[in-house]
Length: 134
Image (cartoon, rainbow, N blue to C red; front, side, top):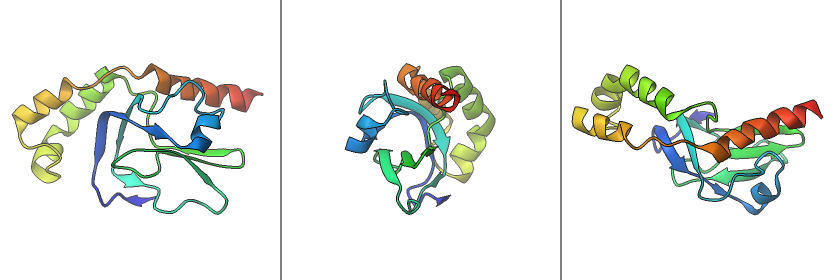
């Protein structure tokens, strides 16, 4: 992991599955283009040897990968729109004044209205639990 040269990624955003991701039991129930909730400034700059990329989007080239029975998953299935709004309120000054992720406080308030539920991303969490229990 290293800082993403494209900067922070935050909010409810679509991710897209690779052919390997479409076959992955971890991502069962998640379709290409589904929204996920996330917040991060880092990315996987190089996959581990033998790993397969499972998902990507325009900001983060590797949103999910698998190597053997180990997985990496950038989105946060536990993040609800309410939690994203709380984080945005908490880090608002940093997002606007320090990182320039958002232009101003009006943009910050507008950004908070864009957060959505991501039920298919929650399926990933359930899949992970089911896989570890089997």
